[in-house]
Amino acid sequence: MDQHSIVVGLDVHKGSITAAVLPPNVARPQETCTIENDARAVERLVKRIMKNGNAVFVYEAGPCGYTLHRQLYRLGCQAAVIAPGLTPVRPGDRVKTDRRDAENLAQLYRAGQLTEIRVPTGEEEAARDLVRAREDAVADRLRARHRLSKFLLRQGRLYDGKQAWSQKHYAWLRQQRFELTLAQQTFDAYLRGVEEADARLASLTTQVLELAQRPSYAALVQGLRCLKGVDTLTAITLIVETQDFRRFGHARAYMDFTGLVCSENSSGDRTRRGSITKVGNAHLRRVLVEAAWSYSHHNSSGATITKRRHGCPAAVVQIARRAQDRLHRRYWRLTQRNKPRPVAIVAVARELAGFVWAIAHSVSSTTAA
Image 1 (cartoon, rainbow, N blue to C red):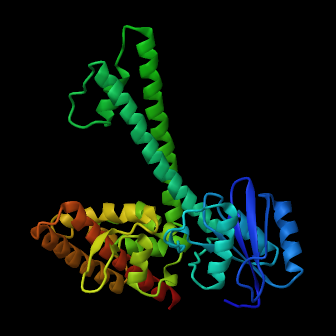
Image 2 (spheres, one colour):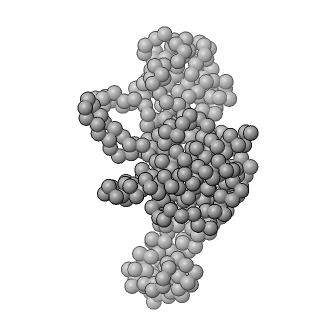
Image 3 (cartoon, rainbow, N blue to C red):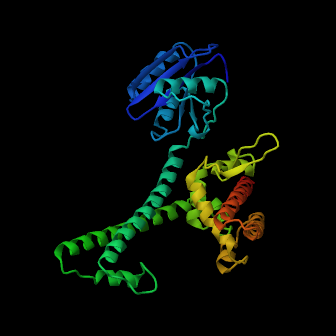
């Protein structure tokens, strides 16, 4: 970090921003102030600070998004958004205020101890939000189905068919009638909620599939679909959540980004590894773990996988086949050592992330050539 630049730590909330100004060659911030989280107030603060020289504005990523970063960029300022999960915390420091948080950000950034995140472009963020909206719709549909099924269970109405939520099940639901008017109204409301959730999910799924066919995503989606357990929805989720695979220099760095690596607390001759860190993208972890369950089954390439791999670059197909063999062996070796199945699946998901990184780099090299 340039010692001759002003560093401004910002503690950002919905209604306010606390700023701590750290001048050049000074150990501690000399000024703190609190302003409204408003574009005009931010512009006035920036102009006042920039009169004294170049400044770097630093704040942690949070629920307020990247609006402040983009405004600072438009004003011609240098801005850094920090990964909050990687911010150092002093042992025994139990005092937390907005002012202290802003001052710590300024001092830690000057010392080079903070980890910046890559701020997505507006288009990248919009694509990611669309995919996440579909994930939310899946969760909403599950909750709506639970409400309806539990209501029917309380009323003693049990569906005796083979598959729930099939066309036959929906036909059975629409035939249900209750003697009490209030019970019928409750049932109609729950059923309508399920049908609306189905329609919303179908609409969002169509939009996400159309997104996956765009030229900026199509080649990488096709490459990732060569992996067993990864189809279009999983592939596009991996892409929009990662945004740019080239920022990871090696596979282990990408594994760290997913939060699937083991935590460790070793000292002296003692080595102790614990659960996964979960310091990373939770959406990536979810889809990788879901895909990893495919490698617990028979190690065979059916017609579906063969069709998905048809027409893909030979290097990508080779990576996918190597992943299929290795991850299948990895899962069964762990389970034969009496590792719980979920633990084995997480280990497989961690290595699957490495193969995802390898395919992304292979596709990028092919496209560039």
